[in-house]
Image (cartoon, rainbow, N blue to C red):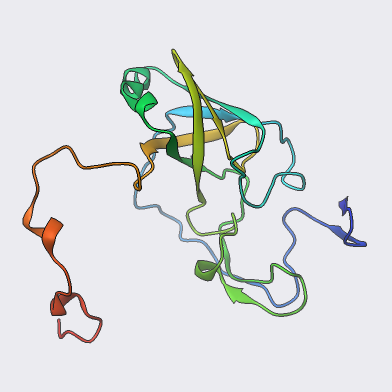
Length: 182
């Protein structure tokens, strides 16, 4: 147990709080993931990790593994990148959570909590530099040693390079409406 400063209470990292509901996990998985690197941050406990990364946060280092280092080519042209990572210490069985620990609960998909069926973390990080296999960024919110899943240009800064497709110009298509018969 750790004391959370300012809260006046003790918090356990994997506790189930009042009003939270967990489910049994399936025995099989649908997909395999490849960890392409490791994220290095100043945080070693989930109790000290920020809830959301900050653009002015600490400098963090992303170590990209071979053979993925070549995939970093041209990434330096973007001011911000999306970093996707696997929140390897997170619970995966909560469907209702009580983030304020006040007896009320919310559905997992309505939160940005790390506890989720597929604990994929994502952050829009400020790209500081790329040197070889090392990417330096600000704006992360994960533990030191977190497995890296992917790096992408921030979608707000990216213009598709491939030729346009018909779907690129679709707007207001009634077949995408939830009430459209399937």
